[in-house]
Length: 334
Length: 162
Image (cartoon, rainbow over all chains, first blue to last red; front, top):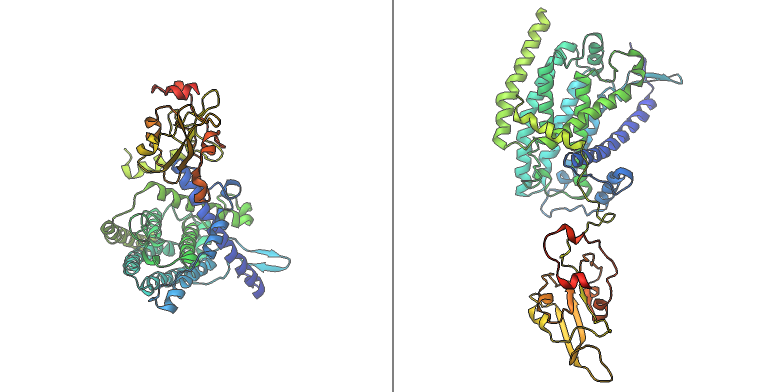
């Protein structure tokens, strides 16, 4: 039984994590631009501060000061609420992801996650599904045909890939015998990192996850180089910035979830005495995954819409279902 | 055999370890080609007289109509150019100029040439109208010029001599 955590410790921790997450988002954009640049024989941002490290701050100042354009015929409340909802759910989803084993500092117990929910995995998926509403409602409320078409694309893609994503996790849940992310990590510690037995699940999870967070090559909701920006066509300034925040934070949350489910969360391989530095290993694994996402963006061309749908329903979903079935049979009989 | 889908990853990864080819412009000014057509220049003879005689052929040749020449007679007391007349006003509107070099071709005395300087942007449009005094002096900002021997195209005589 884990010791009890005082309420204000949780509060301070939540504040810290939200701010760290925003910082991580800002520097993910920096890392992405830098890495993409190097992969295309460019430098990337290098003017604002050393190595362009102040670029995200400059971008933020620019976005906040920019006029937040409001279409005359837009539906006011949903138009304003949509980016807020998307950003909120993305940030909230990170609260259940464990990034440490828990410490006792000055007599106070500090848990390695913001909240400990017994069904944390379901909570993440539920919050993700609510986040989709932000994208759909935002496109609809803008009262523009491009936004509406964009949100239709988003809707179709996210709903299609959510099924495969949830099914791909089922194998891990069966092997971890819990919906609690901490329990799943402990189970991996006791047996083996789940990316080995659940390799198919990992592949489906990553592919579905890339589509869920609408990262290239599955970035049809935006498709910034060929289609009008999609559901956020009519957004500008920091409202657009919130949608962008939601997208990047979703990517971070998904990478965090992947680390937790398949790569043993905050643990260092083999050497258990290093587990006290949990957040460091967690961030390193997270960074490696995020860099992988960026590498993928630099390497692969965008899918056509029918290819996307065919891949989602005819390849990913059957594979995910089969993986879950086989895992279930093996767990029961072996 | 690696499927072509995965070959792309190798290609992008390889670039990370190469040196970027970006030229950091304000710090590094790339040398221009010797025949590069940039900011104009009006020339004087060695004895100090202006080569321009105010014939307006450059203005006639200019497709962008950006040259304005008003000529006046040389007098024994006030001799500006080597010819009968001189350019009392010689203005080039740099915001209209397309740097085609026709003025240079039209000039019978090689009085006007196009230099190598391209850093000629201004904050104010009025500052882009270059007067005769500005055109007769050396440009304020100079850009490096590549070694003419590197190229096999002949550089015009007036470029090498003046």
